Image 1: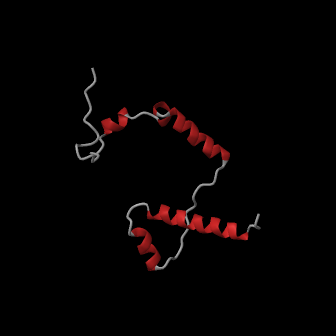
Image 2: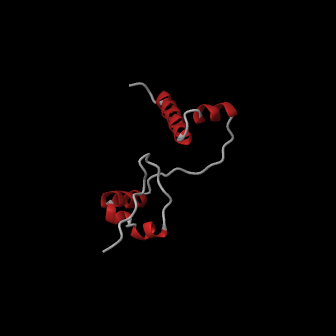
Image 3: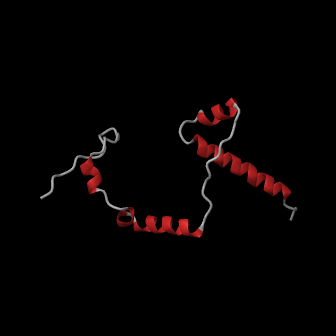
Length: 96
């Protein structure tokens, strides 16, 4: 009979340090979440656009604005820029 493993999180929801035994008990994504694994493979095959790493110089005010809400500031910045792109594209389209 196998030894029972310790919970990965404590009552506060903090994750403990993982041991070699924890990693040995791990299972591949396709075994645990087959639908998610299939979606990931499909997306990679279809060549859908992925984000690209770039180096950009931004004013301190812009960075402070997005960082003020905490983690995820780069995603929020990406979303704001996408909104500007869509707005600009809509302004260029002819009226119906």
